Length: 383
Ligand code: SF4
Ligand code: SF4
Image (tube, rainbow, N blue to C red; front, side):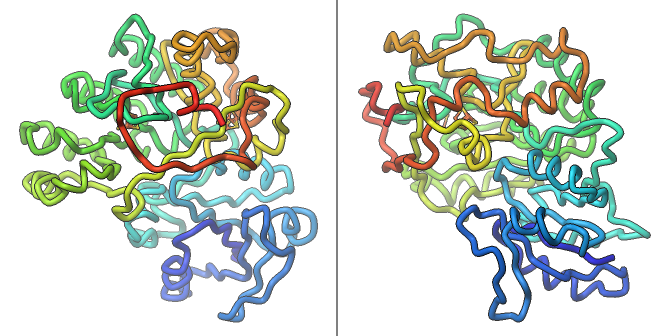
């Protein structure tokens, strides 16, 4: 099967793996780069031909039998799959991001096709979602300036609920054939380990193959009881550790705690210190379609109390309105998954720009260094 490799990063080891498994009949014949600034056609130093994603879709899609999507956590996969499918490509292979992040062998247990444990192959009989995030705890012990989850200015009057999460997972299970990544986060999920564990168990019950991960800033890890990590390990849930300057100081203790149990862990960004980005604007005159194509949150959906939102910001921006009296939030901007019961309708809606995309400027997003001086002004979030 002639394969186009849709790349983002971390793909060199993937090329090596394919060449070690030529007997499977899979041959990479071209690279496809989804970076919008890449050249239409380029011959790389290793002799491979690379096309831009747009050029590939318009000119080269009939030259491959399938596309293998190599991504870490970026949130474009759902939209990209839709474009490939519309171009007639039915053989789409999505290795679970944790497999790529940890450079694991996705040819393991290969038998006529990839093991479903390592590679998801959308059937398109039912829709899928690439990534869904849910808060198990709204509060955080770090309260970083400009937190994307708006934790320092949280205005939810109710804590996240296991009953609500259970109902939502059942409904998502009915509507979708898979969710590639389910992120259980906050806030800081380790501030309530019983609820976080319950969320993880519910998610695993309804999505047996998903890459489920608990995202933490790590500060509480050394104080955690071992059983918490043992339980996560039993249900194959990964700990995703984000490194902040304060985390870095106790990194050794954190890693030894993980090693005490057998829990799978992943250190985000290879252990680099966090750089934060802001892209929200008070003016709603930005190019929503450009943003929808290029924002890394475009397929990172947020689940809360029966509603799916395009991205965390579209749900959580209500905190900004509450704290700073801005007028950004649209309470009708989320999708009621218990009312709109057609998974494809939800899928297509989530692949489009949402109401808030006009209030973001992906082109002019600004990076800033991490801090948590607790002042929390509007300019922490607005460019
Ligand atoms: S650690 Fe994460 S969730 Fe907590 S305040 Fe910082 S960015 Fe937000
Ligand atoms: S609202 Fe902003 S953050 Fe969310 S998907 Fe649109 S551009 Fe991205």
